[in-house]
Length: 443
Ligand code: NAD
Image (cartoon, rainbow, N blue to C red):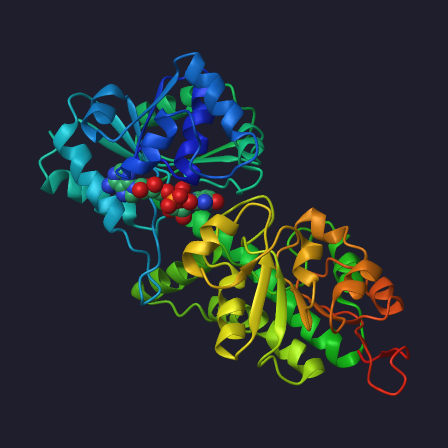
């Protein structure tokens, strides 16, 4: 497994757990040192137990030596990062670099499998690079096996996936992959490499479209006074539509959707197709996270000089991943407008401190709220959902909450006397300062 990040470490340990011998390689020595010292460099529920179990059984080990890894393995996975370039395309330089290394170290027949999310036609570039960098003819065959795991439930996603997608060029490669995944009970889609590459971009982009669609509906709901959660429920019960990914909020973030949507737009453009539907999806998503501060200022006029609390930093609950997390943009905007920021996240604070060392880090959600003139719910960790509206009100200087994930009950918030706004649902906003207990539904 070349690349021992969220995907490489989880997939490597899960493959070890179903009985394979795995070596996880990373060029980042600090990560490998943590693993070799018995630690885990990322937060993922259940991962430590999984790695420990397989380490004990001597089925998994960790190294920075790519030559050792390549020579040891029959199947070599590329699970390195594919971050976005400034033009939106995927930066494939890490894929290219490890392809070159594989070419120079391969000592026998190997299957080289793209696990990283890559644009269609990357398999062709890998094959070409192997040839240019002198891999012995016929020694290395390329395949694609895109990954669909979700951070936070990655281990279960490996053992009970909806499907396993495999793109191959030969019966030999198909057999290698079927044997590898034999213990995992799931439908296997065997196809050519380009179709497999496309399945990954097409799936993530489709889910992103669903999110932006419900967020566009939320805007309409706010304008006409409807409830987007009811609209989603009514739509989602239609089995052709489904309830998943119809949760209105401040949009998608994380290390996958934003970059995969933009990379799909880019590769479509390079192949002569203007993917307008995905461009609109991106635009709606970019606007969604900007609503938080706008909604807050619609009640407290300005954030300048005020203390604002931010509940949650990770891009979603159950992970410490901050890549493209809405909290980054929201906190930057608050600071740029002169606010003082207090925050808490159960697992992502240490990472966030490296980005923003000078804001106040608290010990709980309630602690964040202390003395605040406004509170923004950015990541819907379960512990935030349990916060009592009355307690929040009692510790805040001004009881103003903007809920970017529709995590709280609007009515309970309103009844507790909190100025409460969420996404596409009723807002409870005190309009009359002389009668602060009077609540008016404004949307
Ligand atoms: P990551 O940044 O957590 O891990 C990638 C690792 O690869 C890093 O540790 C990096 O040091 C290492 N690396 C880079 N170049 C290397 C090289 N030449 N040799 C050895 N190691 C090298 O990234 P990730 O989240 O695991 O994602 C990996 C890929 O999987 C990406 O393409 C991503 O889009 C895709 N993916 C991610 C998820 C997810 O939820 N994170 C889900 C599905 C697919």
